[in-house]
Length: 613
Image (cartoon, rainbow, N blue to C red; front, side, top):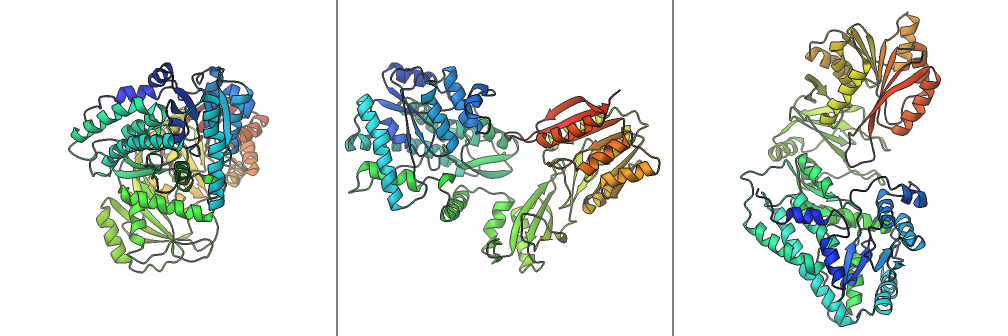
């Protein structure tokens, strides 16, 4: 599609809170009122002579100074905001209106005052105490808090008109903006939208970070442009996605999802379009502040007030949004089919229902799709019509498996399976090899980065074609098979028998004859090797997030391989295990992190250990 006229300008506005439109409004004598939490009604900060500024800290670094004051256990959002304040990034503010939505948020807001981080003599910080639950008593308390700690502060400190008439005008201006943003967002309901989810995310976010009167003309012009914009001839996405969460204000996250093939058609988070860009209704016979308090309290989806009733209501709200914006995909469609096929979702609390989980696995290179239905019983009424309807909706599905899990607890998959459609597995390729993946087999979910991860691991191993290699925790054999061409012999050990079966088949599929796989404990296997006079030259180990057991590490030290290549998905457990191995005579020669899960705090690491001289 043709680029939007103002897109680069909008993106530039999001690079810092003190952007050009904020600077213009401040120069014109407007009061800049910062806020962080949805419990602070944005509309109250946009009375005449004021504008709201949703605080952000893009391109933040490590936030070391803020971490000193707040500790690194607080969420990165609040630490980055405080760090940016200490740097002077919010000196344009006249006030910060905070809410004790969570302890971390309150602590950050308190440090604005304690550290006097905003160098503005007029600056004040005020923090409301929002209610913990939604009822009429809490509503009265919330309204009183808004009056005392928002409106009274604006009136007494800055002389702002906070009359009922002034509030009504502010609501009307707010609703005008909401109508424009909503009209832009409604294009996402179309089968082939003239806007991407990333573009909408940017447009919506600038409406929070910029003075409303100054950004509205640009948004109106963009709305007209979208009405005339021609989308690409064919929809580019694989699935229509709804994002639901608490605080997601980074459009790059949306861009990443869309690069992976999902069109973000709707959002439900604190500063998204729903509920933030829905109009505030003004009821006859009710003062305006009461209407505002009603709106922000009853529509607030903050987990702080997530009692059982709210959780159920929130799920229903999200499902309704998914239907309204036609979010699709296999899991959403299966959920929508449940009622018509009289299938009840399993309830852990009561033990009633049939369907517990739905898993979808997709071959990145092959495009093959496996659907796993996890149920409490193998009896599947209306199985044939259900599968017929599902494959009509998603002809890309190549196999469907029914997994039986009749145990209570957090374990997702059971030990019994029944193939309902297709072969019961999918295949995919990795580093030029073909791999069979069954429902209970482990296979990395980010194949692009997996190729980089395994290439680094194999390069670190320094294989010459003569080595005896042990692939511990081998899974379906991915690492061992990829390394086989450079090794003399590869032995793979794995506790999961289903994965071992897949590994043996994968060796045959690829015509690899120097790999052997066995089901068992890798530590005991190494002990048996040593007893038989065999020692591995190189050990690949890719344990679960909890790391290796003390027994395995002891066996590894007794086996004394020349090189150990440790692939870790848990930095804490890696550090713990490295301490043991280093104490046992190894040294860390090299370590390389690999970002397998962008926009999360998880990281994989490949570590080479060699025998100390």
